[in-house]
Length: 462
Image (tube, rainbow, N blue to C red; front, top):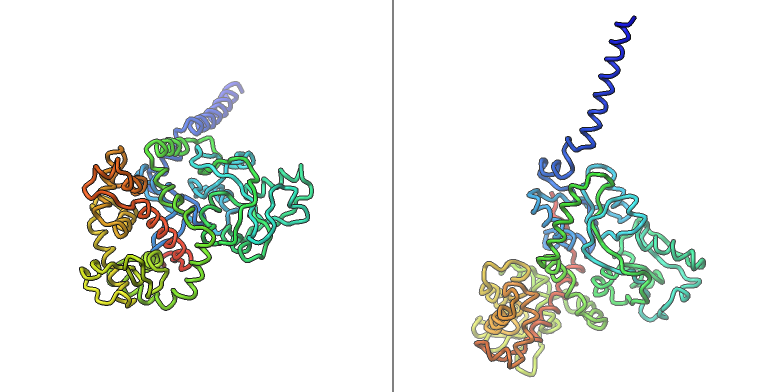
């Protein structure tokens, strides 16, 4: 009996020891942590959403603020980035529970409720929630103005959570939550008077008000909030810690600022009247010109929408346009430039477009090869407007100021200094209307964005 009891005890003790050891190994990360697993498989699985502020296609290539930021993080880890797009925002955070997603890069606001569901990285942007209304309607300035009115919001969004909190103080608040629409669809409904009010993030409004010119800001409905990446709820912080290091470094080295410049900073340059006029001309003037722009596009390997954007800035798509200084035609070529390009009739739409496209390609060819897109194109546009010599002068000034002469954002800030004697006397070509060149590029970028939105590029088919 004593021998049998000892054997039983030894057997139970062995089982308990194995169980405790397995738990110890798991808790002490003898198994691979999240970061190691990603490095081994060579791929980072990122969930996002299609929107102008996060991820979309342009020229059959993915782009967007969140795309560029997350892809740079994957590059730093030495792995590829696999983006999974979900149709609706309210699917983003639940999608992290599947175990197949490493994190969400979808412009997600940090809220107390969401902290119970996911782990967040350190913030990389700040926004506020805005109440929008339609032009021509009475502007709401306080929540009291919303009595007997219905507000529209995305379901499971921070805007929806905000309304739930506000209803405790303002019981009269009423809203509709949408789980099958995205924010751009709600913008469209408000723009065309199908809904009365809408809550959105300030960054979405700033970027989309060009596309929906009837949108108006009523008032700010929240305090400043932070955007961050969202990770599955877990004690394993290996990937989050790595992301925090990357985001901190991106703030310090200016990479985040570069992404803001690339995707957002030019968006405020087009006012209501400019947007309305532009969309009017896309209906009345653009259709008959598209074949001409596409012909030049094929010849010079340029996006036809960029050629069209340059043309709109130059002439508002008026083939007979003439300026007081004598430039004329769709691309407003000077007589000397037309002669150099072999263009005999500047008022002929085909010749003018061909000449303008070829001149832009020439300017782009002069930009140093080390300068990458999109900065390369923005510099070429500035040269198209002000001349390559003056562009080089602006690059010299940029360097004298301690900026980066290969970075458009720095050169843009230096261009107005070509109008100041203190600076232009240090240059080779002297005075130039640099402020106009900076605005010229900003406007074209806006028109290009509008054309990309109106003639949306679809993801390439596999």
